[in-house]
Length: 374
Image (cartoon, rainbow, N blue to C red; front, side, top):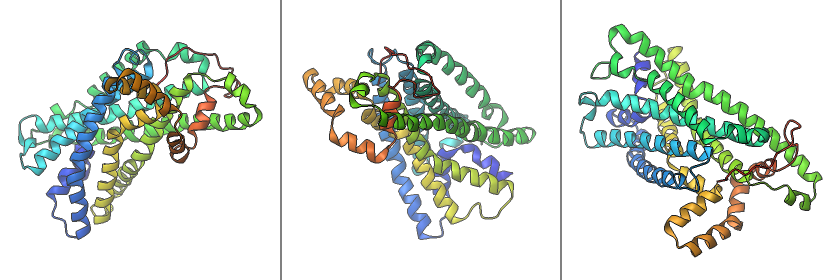
């Protein structure tokens, strides 16, 4: 049971465990050294990148889109998580012992839970919106509205804050559960796994399966259509679907290692195996945690590469108008960008096509939309 309670500190405090333990082997020592220097780099770059992306999404040309709202809130959530991670790192490396300050330890646990869970569900909402745009295009005008997005976010935020408020009343100042609440805190650890691991995996898998199925159907349909007809059916929604698809795929790839290690540790702890604390597990947990942090740090890069409107808006913040327009136009048609797409995301080209053709999904006919695209 003690292992369950130790997991309350979430992935952010793995760094503390790494520095506090005396490592027996050179491999463990190297991993901890890498973590010691990579964590602040990832955190600082991530906070700055997310704040920059947030600035872009709040611009007038971007903020009236429901996708932009979800991604803007995700920027805030990821930046908050990385800031908490940086506080833990500073406290550990410089021996400030901030966790011993009244309420600080509880606040750190609460914030890591809230930010971590919120980021996961925002990706789910982004994936759901992408599913709507690709497989239910006739519902885009009805469902993909900023007002709906704000209402959904408010509801999920209230639920998450309420669910993870237990550190403030169920734990001591040293972040140890009170005896009377020990079983409840243990149950909350497993509930967190359901909310941030099992349920999101199921939902994202279902939505992505539908999206991929539609793109495969679109690929077959594209082979039967001429280039001229393809040009006639082009629709601006493709820009949204491309970037949202890239966001989801990147999130899945960088989060799979962390979730896999976490799932394995949960099963091993439940079965009371003795190999939970081995060197190999520590190394795996450290590397997967760094990838998890990285998934929150590179958002602005994904948005810039795959979001043409995001790219134009960002260029407009730093470049003269003429140069910004020229750069965006050249970037949209650049060979390098197309090569990157083909190498890293083979399905993106099909996603573009799937979002812009008649009756490609479930026999429905796409209705042209006027929604702004990213």
